[in-house]
Image (cartoon, rainbow, N blue to C red; front, side, top):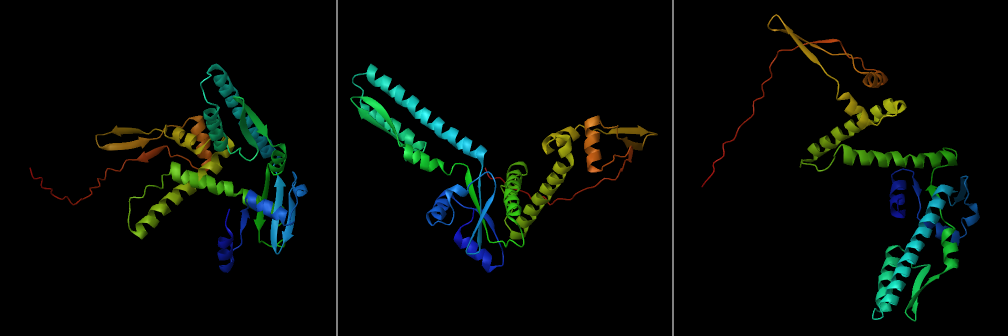
Length: 290
């Protein structure tokens, strides 16, 4: 999601945008009669207003998940109220105000204050549900709106929707870069070194993407594939004293399938290079004072 100020900056530089809007922004559009509740459906619906396109849809699976979550939260409060009522009955000196404080804290934590409250009558805690608020709130369960300034002549509604769903790939890329490739912490200070560090990480991610594409039909994750390839071995054979070659055994079936998917063929024999590389490093003497 991007804000109105960012949208203005994008337009100044000649960029277009595809973004989702918040629930509050959806309610504002409904209040202004730009869109209506009845337009939300399983199928994509488009509304255009002042050269801005709004794509509306209700995800029935997500709507069901939200409804179940709301019911689950309500039941957790009911269970807590029952526990506190039992405690108040068994302990005459216990205060109902203390029990109410504990329950209200839980209601606040679960964000139920808008439609659920608890009161005390004669040391008995009672739950009060505002069904009208629940019905109003549930109208937008599973509903979302995508907003764009792209012209219809350039891309249709379904194309915009599909491009927005591509955001999941971007989020997945960031997770991979941050977790698997450990882009942070960065131990370099100069700008050019930082850029170099990020470049190496992005190149590594491109390799991961290619591996993922190649092994997708094998139902293997990149991590599983690399662990399997780590079992590849090489035998070093020596004869006539200084004559040596390296023999690569036939890979097992799974590794062979992965290599074939990448278009990689392993040589049977590798000549041994006896060259020795020496790296000279400057050594600084340190003086330790006792």
